[in-house]
Amino acid sequence: MTQSETMTDRWRSRICGAWLRIAASGLLPARWFRPPLLAEPQRRAATGHLQFEVVSHCWQYAHLLQYQLSSLVLFPPTRATVIMTVYFAAEDSKTAGLLQRFAAIEVPGVLWNWRPLPRQALFRRAIGRNHAALATKADWIWFTDCDLMFRRACLDTLADLLQGRRDALVFPRVERCTDLLADTDPLLRPLQDTLPVVDVDDASFVALRRTRATGPLQITHGDIARTQGYCRDISFYQQPSPVWCKAHEDRAFRWLLGTAGVPLDLPGVYRIRHETKGRYTGSSRNSRWRSGIRRLSRLFKERG
Image (cartoon, rainbow, N blue to C red; front, side, top):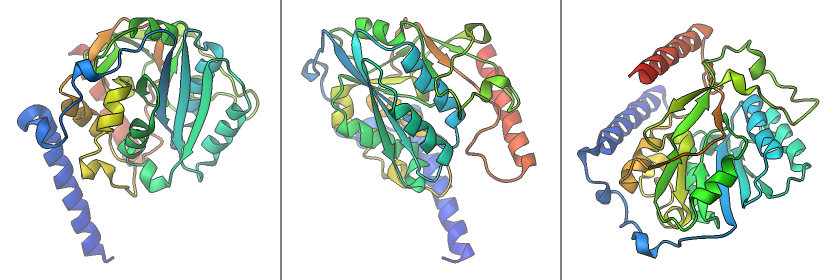
């Protein structure tokens, strides 16, 4: 492929992505892009001991994934079973090694499920999410990011709140987050090579109110996931990419389901926020610029 062809493909991708973001703003009807949603009375109203599948992606974020997996070891569910699915690329040796260590830890109520993908498929997060959605056997599937933790009472309370419900999409009303942490913060340097299970100090987190099911907080009814997938019918979001893609499909997913989600009063949802993205490439100046944009964006969102 020539350089001009590469540039043409890049611009074509940008234009297509921008058009889909405009469509997902509500400008176009979602029904043009997906089959009819499974009607609410046709969705199973599961009761009793529920099964959840948690779906996470990890690329060069083993130091954050370690906290997520540890939270399931430290606060295992008793009123639900959790399948912890992690999509990763084998060449990310730190993540692969971490998963191998956790695979040896038996946790009541938790089933580990590691799913390797080619790096280019991992970089388009909707591909893994769609794969998990179509294959899941769970009552509910939680699409999340590897910087999220499920701490005390989180999953058991979720099991209580979802008894007999048929909502397409729900999310935690409150998420407890750190500030945007620099790479040098001790919280971003757990002891990966010695003790696989690590914990955090709750005092480092503040409660933030959420108004919609954002990317790490999308908890979907299993029947909806199995029949709709995750942006399955938008081919652009199912194409592998040579670089990590921004997760604009999160918004498209809500648009396709026709809802921002139903808020739940769910405790124990914690997230570690960080300035430097593991997926960033290029010069240190470029990384600093992007980190600055992230800080400003967070500031305006939380003051708005």
